[in-house]
Length: 182
Image (cartoon, rainbow, N blue to C red; front, side):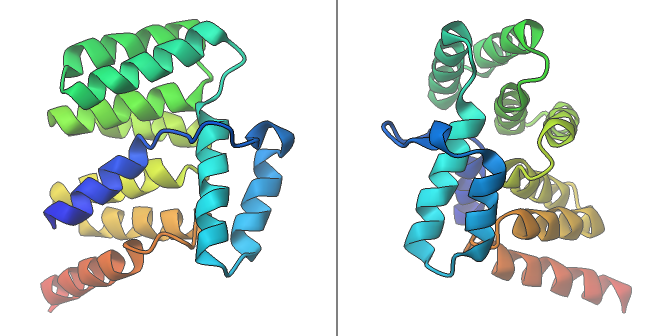
């Protein structure tokens, strides 16, 4: 379970790879390719391009803040990371990745209520955000809300069918839910 949590949380704040030309392709085209491919290596490359597109803003300031906030979050200084991501949201309230990063920070700090609120905002801005959806599933599972965990994992797989850890996680949560219903 701990390994799964690390995998899902890392997906929430995966940094884009430098040099990947996501700007040449729109998100819709990238998602079309992601749905169509059966090649796992190609799927990972497309997924990285999607993350890069999500993580890029038209503002150098916001791009710098995102990188800085992610570094601060990864160092464990959650209060400072929240402040950085909150400043980003103040500057650009429609930047979904700022909410996603703040949601991740809240999750890591154990503030699930705030994290869920930011995931919901992320999903209003980018309903296909498979990182936010998988993180929501993990939070719902930890909060023992198995029906919502199942829904979140299903939505994450619908957005990105190439998330190798999620089918088995979904199966386990369904098994737990079925056992409760007996």
